[in-house]
Image 1 (tube, helix red, strand yellow):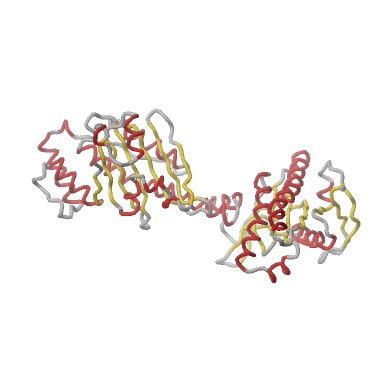
Image 2 (tube, rainbow, N blue to C red):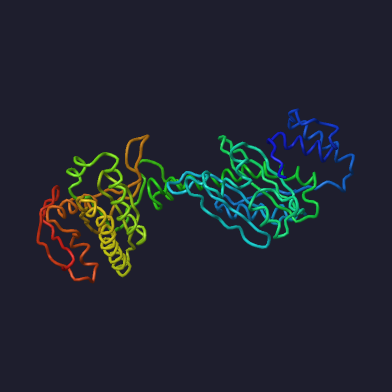
Length: 435
């Protein structure tokens, strides 16, 4: 039967049942760090130095590594000091629009692997039947023996671990400095399971490792948030220290701007929540095509989306990137066909879009007020693509592009004539794909 004990009670039970045979500390007392240290020291002195297990040496983890590297390093550190582990796992929460956290597991002789936990995982059977549920929800430690087939705990994972040779399972909570709770577990193959000294050493080591884990997890969460709200390229530059107003660099890029046609009329006749869902579906059709092509979504502006495809100065590479951006525009239009089919079946107006493409140099960096910045693009090229996107709507064309863009594509194009764009003195030639 699994033992479920409070974090402090686990220490008490270890001291009472294993170190002192139940004669020194009762389970109702609160074992302070001083009490635990004193009790352990007294017990080690009584048993002799040969009994002691010391997972020594500095615990180091490269802060630029990921969670799998963290678990690989920690497991190797523990095993290098004589404690054979069959399996180690750690669960870490995060902030991400699609997942609630990461589950990382390492089996002996293999590298750690990472799985993503979706939002709502805590309501799923997989989590409900996991020993880590109690660790997360109640802040308790869970420990059970695996070497007696007639007394197997009621966890589906227990049999799997026992069949692999595990003899003892120990899961414990780890508290981050902000109060967030995570869980770590260890499984040994030693006959009789973890000794009392090994158990205490695991508590000591994990209390230190939790600080390293927190930094690793925090960096991951920070990257997730920046990827989500400012984009991957911009987010990495912010993490690398580009945080001062006006700091940035001039880069050549394909600029890609699109919007939802007739969105004003649509919003006037559509309930708010349904309109938000419609915008989300629309943007996903566009974003999916852009992300698959390697573009960087900079921002959503009402019913519009601004994208860049950074370019190399080399003409051949620029040509290829423009072809990629144009193919992404076609794919985005194709993606909209599926939700439109459902809308028509429901008697609703199908969605349509206008996409504008341009090539030019932009300032890519920090713009804004002293205490509120946006990492985005600015410059005449940005104004041009914005005006082109409005022109696409006026011309009722799904895709339009500038002469600067047209010279980089080998596709057959159709000249839509010269047009004056607001804020630009000279008329500009505008093209679309030949129909």
